[in-house]
Length: 253
Image (cartoon, rainbow, N blue to C red):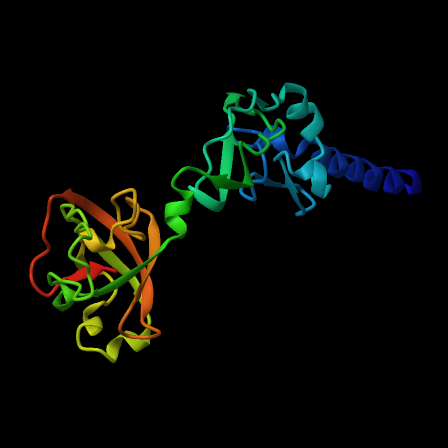
């Protein structure tokens, strides 16, 4: 009788331990195993403890008892191709970023090693032909200064300066300082307003352009010549040769 009572608990304990070992990834509905980290890829053993069947469990140490036999044996690690070429610098002038990518050749399966980073980014410093133009700061005035000026001190034998045809640039204001509100004409230089700026012959340099006339879709800077402290940034939207801006516009100095 004593022997019978001792054998029975041992048999029960053996069956209970056997149930713990059997519970795990094999009991999960497909997919039995999961790549990467997946908190939903979970199973509960007969001991009512939680175990996982995702690849991350190898790091966290909470894999189910049969993870190695069920998942790792059939696991397929991620495979990637070579890195592509670096992209052009995001800036045409000064500091910017460049990046490169690579493609997945074989995706991970059955809890295989997840894919590494597919994109790399690093800093770059650009210095293109337009870099010098991007650094120029335009000086502007209201078009009330637009007039034919005759120098009273010009000697009769001195040649008149060749008159070049004007051109217009349409600029979109992006930023303006609070000081601009002081003058009535500069108070209209508010963000997101489109303004026409005319480059007249007297303001042109030797290359027949006005300094600071902007770059397409690139933010450059401006300041007013008659309102100290009034300045900001803008982006050129269009360029028109042989053009005159409408009344109440601005001109380059």
